[in-house]
Length: 247
Image 1 (cartoon, rainbow, N blue to C red):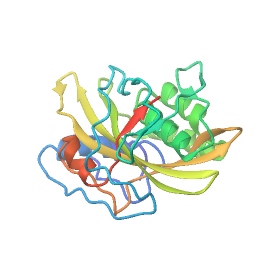
Image 2: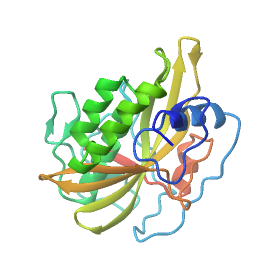
Image 3: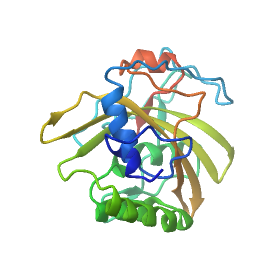
């Protein structure tokens, strides 16, 4: 299924693999999740953290990214939010870059990019993906986005925002490849009105290239990690998602 087909109100939910942004997936979540409850469950993995008592992340800014918080004290506990390192630079288009070569650095990139990859006009969206994609991924994604805007373009006044609220590092065994699931609260609308915020998640495949993390692919969340219709932090944190704190 193409990118735009998966993000239009008339499309069906995406399949297991969804390489880039999914127009129908966003719209389907906004329209369906408000009326249908989906159980949130998490299977155990090698990350080994429990987030049931973890406080929620900081309040979002108007751009959909939680505000940085003061540095944590030197003494921390396993239940403290994951500290995500600050990027060292920002591209001309506003995309944060320059993340440490660590799993936390990859997670920081995924969290900060999640609000930026939503549909925002063809040229801007292609520019964002050009900035964050691996070379191989951009060749694929730019062609998909271009074709989707030609055949399944969203309405002119259609918009979406996503605020990251939690994450899960799913794979970090390879120092140059990290998989991060990001949970956001998604909101969309048109000139006719605005929807309520609902949970929405994606799985980010990140690869280390040219001394920075880059996006190699996007997928639906794995079957072991699902979202529900609740945006109550206690619900998704108790289920195994992890809170984070931006440095």
